[in-house]
Length: 88
Image (tube, rainbow, N blue to C red; front, top):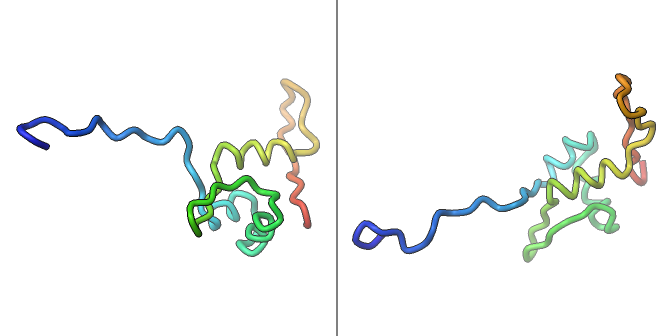
């Protein structure tokens, strides 16, 4: 601050969030090793920042939706679906 004024505007929240390997593993119900295998084969959507690898939350959710089998009919109360995880 200079003279009571901010030099920059307010910090904006990113339009997307990313997940670490442990969170991805927990969300998918698989181990970290399997997460790294999926990343290594290019099957999971990732953002690379130098050596860091992050999975965008929205892309992960889309990736999961694209693999759901047994999707209930619209308006159905049956909500059980299974996620196809390659290599499992």
